[in-house]
Amino acid sequence: MTNQTKSEKDRVVIFDTTLRDGEQCPGATMTFEEKLEVAHLLDTMGVDIIEAGFPIASDGDFEAVREIAKRTKNAVVCGLSRAAHKDIDRCAEAIRPAKRGRIHTFLSTSPVHMKFKLQMEPEAVHDLVISQVTRARNHTDDVEWSSEDGTRTEFDFLCRCVESAIKAGATTINIPDTVGYSVPEEYYDLFKRVRENVPNSDKAVFSVHCHNDLGMAVANSLAGVRAGARQIECTINGIGERAGNAALEEVVMAMKVRNDKLPYWNKIDTTMLTRASKVVAAATSFPVQYNKAIVGRNAFAHESGIHQDGMLKNAQTYEIMLPETVGVKQTSLVMGKHSGRHAFIHKLEEMGYKLAQNQLEDAFVRFKALADRKKDIYDEDIEALVDQEIAHSHDRIHLVSLTVIAGTHGPQRATMKLDIDGQVRIEEAEGNGPVDATFNCIKSLVPNEAKLELYQVHAVTAGTDAQAEVSVRLSQDGRSVTARAADPDTLVASAKAYLSALNKIVMKKQRDMPVVAAAGH
Ligand code: KIV
Ligand code: ZN
Image (cartoon, rainbow, N blue to C red):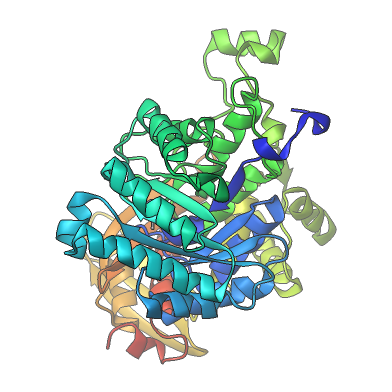
């Protein structure tokens, strides 16, 4: 669609909920600083509305929403709240510093949710819709109301609630497919019928919010848009509750590449999609599946001979979009140990990183250390290094040194030195294998109740001198966090990943409590 043909009625508003629905899924917990970084990126890439969190959920959530509200330059900053007045008031307080703020308040409307979750009669639910929207509207004139489990809601009741929500002042109406149950034709039909049946439907923007339990979140979202919805709620990399939400990069690229069939537009700078995917993957430590549409490592790779041959003759044979459109750059052999600071900074700029001076200095020192141990350094190595720099710069526990004795005769032994809030401590431990010994060292230096849920290793690039990237997921008090770290030594990467996850737990728990106490003792 060219600029001349763009009309407001075809504009689709992109509502990103990576920091709320995305962050709320098991293991995707982000620290305060990571949330700020993600929000900054979303704002820069043209997201219209950033759902920054659920302020009543915790003081940490509240603070993050408030800080994002203060800092965001272009996007509307939104907070989520249940129907209770204290939730709504807390949400209003969190978004108050925003140039433009929105309260998103929701209530279940399906029979199963009303009976078992809310234990309320439909009449009482309907009354509560009016009172929650009215309460929110007293705080701001940008109010979104969501009928949770909307796709399993009885049609007439849904229409009645939507009509009342609009009458009470809701400016956006979201009908979520909360459990990812719908199919595209059905979701299309639902929006069409609701818009036709609700007399004041023209007074609000309709919004789609689809979960991916049956793998149809993107298709359903686009079906809703074809039926008149003009807001898509989505997340980077499709992270979110259970199987996730519709992926932002997929809905955006579908509308761009198939604009003949989906003649809608939005303000996203698509060349930032790859970067956004990497930042969110690093912040949440949720790896992106290799064959993920748009941003997966293989999304533009052509392996078979027939495909490669076709590509050499004409890229259009097997490529429906140019990799550059989504910000993919050719992987290049970057540098080695002779590369200087200037070249390093230039490379970072080219890769889209903007680091603070101290982060830059640290990253350069680590780059040099890596270059001493690894002959060829690729973009992926730099990415792993810088993402770690960003993720760990606020950590309170740092690995100083690790020595492990491994081999055929156990038990294996590890000796570890940690810097904990500026104090260096040392410990030795045995284990059933070198990884176990390493993790046992951490447990005696930082006693904690965290349970190891996942431990995964993969190589960042090819070659036996490749860096190992380790993902660790820990859970404590019903909340799990994932963290990643890379190093040419697999055990060092393992220790760093474990510590990083522990740092997240500690930082989440209490920002200025002594680490050992915050970790559970
Ligand atoms: O999936 C859902 O229903 C939600 C609502 C809170 C909008 O996330
Ligand atoms: Zn959701």
